[in-house]
Length: 171
Image: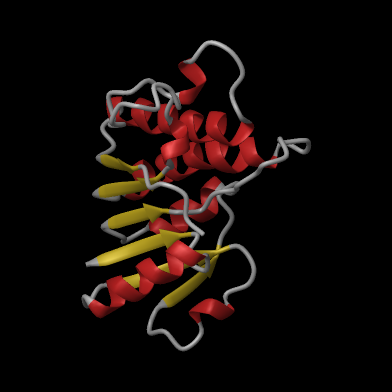
């Protein structure tokens, strides 16, 4: 299968790319700048930013599945707006590019932080409200991941076949 992976040079992306290659898939690895973690792998590299819808659509052309792993983490807020641009606007660009390129399925890599934290004593599943739907303050990162999920859900209504994955913290 032909697959594209955004954030391919990151920790999770690099591991996913290696697993996909081991399973015999053809991988197009999208990265922003440093692609050294991908050196020596039998894949196609593409330097593409999630802020560039045209470049994304071109990179997704001919791909059956897109794994969207690119994201920005913060613990200090979002003074320059880059978290919002990456985790929400970038998701919109990825979804639009998937539809434009005719991608069969998008796998959107979100976070457990997209969900409301409370109640702590109950299992967390996809029926829990998103973090930005809770009364009171919401951390910037949590709000951005919830915002990205809202975007994916909007595109589901437009016919995009997408799955949202919500892993816990990754170190």
